[in-house]
Amino acid sequence: MDYLPSIAFVDDDDDLRNANRQTLELAGFTVVPFADASSALRHLTPDFGGVVVTDIRMPHIDGLELFRRLRTMDPDLPVILITGHGDIDMAVEAMQEGAYDFIAKPYPADRLVQSIMRAVEKRRLVMENRQLRLALESSDETLPLIGQTPAMQNLRKTLRHVANADVDVLIAGETGTGKDVVASLLHEWSRRRQGNFVALNCGALPETVIESELFGHEAGAFTGAQKKRVGRIEYASGGTLFLDEIESMPLSTQVKLLRVLETREITPLGTNEHRPVDLRVVAAAKVDLGSPEQRDNFREDLYYRLNVVTISIPPLRERKDDVPLLFVHFLQRASARFKTEPPEMTAAVRSRILEHDWPGNVRELAHFAERVALGLSEIDGGTVSQSSNKMSLPDAMEQHEAKLIRDALKTNRGDVRLTIETLGIPRKTFYDKLQRHGIDRADYAKTRTSD
Ligand SMILES: Nc1ncnc2c1ncn2[C@@H]1O[C@H](COP(=O)(O)OP(=O)(O)O)[C@@H](O)[C@H]1O
Ligand SMILES: [Mg+2]
Image 1: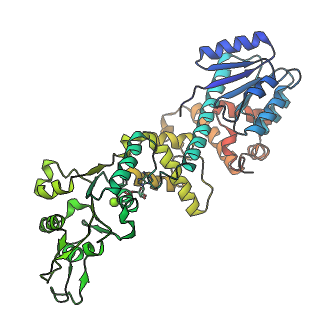
Image 2: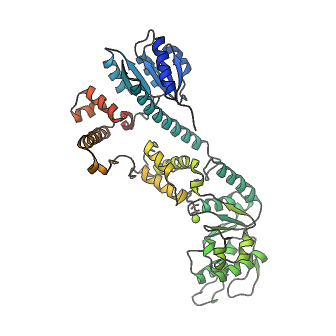
C-alpha cells in the first residue's frame, strides 16, 4: 500500500518551476513538472496518489480552472494554489470550493514544504481508505475470514485442504483470534455440511453436566435425569462436533472422550449399549496443550490423538498488516447495524490501531470499531492535552484558540461562512489561523463527498 509521494508541479514560468522542483526534491518528494494545465490534466488520473501544486496565473487554462477540473475528477485530490499579488480573493474563493491551501508569492521554501507534507499525509489516508474499501468489496471469497497477510492466506488454504480430509482437528489460538470462525468453516467447507454443527463449550459447564451433555443418558440414569436425552456426540453424528476451550475439560471426561475418538462409539449414561457414531471432532484451545505446564490438566494421550492436524491462528499483533482491513470491515458492519454512515478512518484512529497490541485480538478490534462507528471513541475530538499546567500562557492561548476553531468548524460542519460568523473574525484572519494551527477545513465537511 506504499507509494512515493509525488508532487505534480504546474507553472508556466520555467525558472520558478525548476527552482521549486529542486527545493521539493531536496525535501524528498518526487516531482512531476508541467509547463501548462492541459498537460497536467492529460497526465493526472483519480488514482494519482500525490498532491497538485499549481500557479494561478497561466495562459489558456489558469490554475483556478485547473483546480476546478481536477475537483470534478477527484474531489479528494489536494490542490495547493500559488498566488501572486491581487490573486488573494480568487484563492480564498478556491479554498471555499475545497482547494487545499494557497500560498502567496514570495514565500519561504519551508512554507511550501510544510503545506505539501500535510497534504501528502491527507492524500495517503484517502488513498488507503479507498484501497481498503476496494479490497473488502473483492473479499467475498475470503469471508468470513478476512485478511491478506501471508499468514491469513495460508490459513485459508490449509482450511480448504483440511476441511475435506475427514480428520479430527485441533485449533490453537489466543482468545479472539477466530477459533469459532475457523471451526465453523471446517464444517461448512466439508462434505459434512449437511449434518449438524454441534458446539459445546467445555469451560462453561460443570463436570457432571458435561458428561450427560456429551454422551446422553437414559431416563433415570442418575438423580434428576427424568427423560432420556440424546447426547451432543450422537447429535453431531454425520456432522461436526466442536469442543471449545477443551483445555477446561475435566480429566475424567478426557478419558471417556479419548475412548470415543478411538472406538467411534458412544455408551449413553445408564446403558450398556455401544452406538456407532460418524464423527468429526474439532477442538479449540487457547493454551498450548503440548506444553509441559499442561500435563497436570490435560492428558497427553488425548493431546496426541487430537494433535494429528493442528491449525494455529496467529495473534493479531503478528499480522498487523491486516488490522486496517479488518478495522474498516468492522466499521462498515457496525455502521450497517447502527444505520449510520461508516466514518472515514482518520489519521488519529489509524495510528492508534497500528500502535496497539490487541491482546483481545480480532474481538477487541471489532469492539473498538463499534465504538468508533458510534462516535464513542476518545481518540477523535476532545483530545486537548492535559498538561496545560506546564504550558506557557501564549501556548495555552494558542491551544485554546485552535480548539475554539475546531469546535466552530465541527458545529458548522465545515461551512466557512457560518464558522467565520460564529468566530467573529475576518475571513483572511480565519484562513491564516487555519494554516498556523494546521487545521484542515475539509476534515469537518462530513457530507462533502456524499452530496
Ligand atoms: N479473520 C477474521 N475476519 C473477520 N472476522 C473475524 C476474523 N477473525 C475473527 N473474527 C471475528 O472476531 C470475533 C472473535 O472471533 P472468535 O472466532 O469468536 O474468536 P475465538 O473463538 O478465537 O475467541 C468474532 O466476531 C469473529 O467473527
Ligand atoms: Mg471462541
